[in-house]
Every structure is written in C-alpha cells, then in structure tokens.
Image: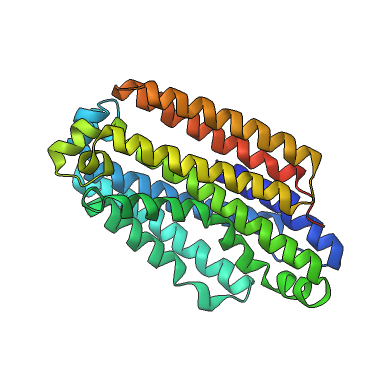
Length: 292
C-alpha cells in the first residue's frame, strides 16, 4: 500500500503542479525509488520489532505469525534489524544531500525510536498507540513533500488558488487516511482482546468493553465519511469525486453493519480486512482529483 500511495501521490497530485509551474522533479526516478525503499525499510523494521515484542501475545492471538512459528535467536533477529537500519541510514543521508535537506535527517532516527518504543510498550499506550500508528501512515506523503519544497513555495507565490486547493485536498486526504487507519487499529484491538488481556494491555475494548468500542468505531467511520464528502465540496462538485464519495459511504456502511454483527475474533478480523481494502480503494481517488 505504501508503494501505491507514493506512486499515485506523485503521478496525480504532484506531477500536474510541476507542469503548471514548469518545474523539474526534485528527485530523479531512481532517487524516488530509493525514497520509497527507505520508507519500506522503516515500515519493515517497525513490523519486525512489533512481532518480536508481541511473540507471547501473538501465540494466543495470531499463532501463524512468523516469529511465533519459528524460533529465531535474539542475536540473529537484531542482526537483521541493524542491517536494514544501516541501509536505511545510508539512503536517508544520500537523499538528504541530493535534495539539500540535511536538516531533516533527524526524521529517520526519530521515527525508528518511536516505532521501537511503540513495539516495546505500545500495549500499555491504549488509544495513544493507535493514534501514533495512524499518524505514521497518514504523514507518509508529507515526507515526499520535503523534497518538493521549492515547488510548493513557487506554487504559493505565483498560483495562490491552486496552492490553496492543493493544501485543502492534501489536508483532507491525509485526515481521511488517518481516520480510516485509526478505526482499523481499534478493530484490530477487538480482534486481539484475548491475548491483549493476558499482556496487560490498556486497549479501548479492554477499558470500555466491546459495545462501547463499536460505538467509537462507528463515530470515527462517520467522521471519515464526512471528510470524504468535504473533498467533494472542496473540488467544486466534481462528478467523479461525487461518485467516489457515494461508493466510499456505501462501503463504510457495509463495514459498520458487518462490525456491529460481529462478536468473534474472526468476525473482527474480517472487519479489519474490509477497512484495509477500503483504504486501498480510497488511494485510487487521487487519479480523479482535479488539482491544477
């Protein structure tokens, strides 16, 4: 999904603005590929660390996970992590030099540190852990904008209307991704209640119960639908965005009905999958958004 997000974001949201101001790409294609690889490395490290610290919980919730099924020595596991980490550091420094953004290198170690802290202690963070993960997903496009800062500056100076539209669309789209992922994280907490209770988690379902958690999820999904319809109104009643808003609303309604009827881990797992599919479906909306 991350690769798809970058490709669609670059091709359909940023590229039209480049043509508008007649600007060159800040990163060459292969450098752009390195940026995607860098983000993927951070994501993989986050997943590995999370699975490593959650082995006992996953033995209950998800016994098919790789680190549950196969015992890996601590030294070997961390050799994999630090090897990937080193590759990511090299890529980050290189891209920062090429884009003349050395002052943004701190983003890489900060992200890794937050992911490590979340993997180690996230079960006790409750809703704040859900918010952190959702912010990480939602803010990924903003990393790409750091390299295109000169383009955004020129757009603001010479094409104020297009700049304002771009900022509004980006803000709403980022908020939509955040809300959808937040709802999915809470649904996954419902799915993992049994193991989380053993681990002493402070997840929302364990704090307020299944019924109230479902109510919270419905509220977050209702906010998601509102943001989607806001996109439609911001874009001057685009017919394609209207159709997308209708489809997203229908899919959200189906998801809500499925979740309200669920009371087992398998049922909540299906709800989580539906939300993931909805997020991927939402990414393709970038193709139809008239930005310039």
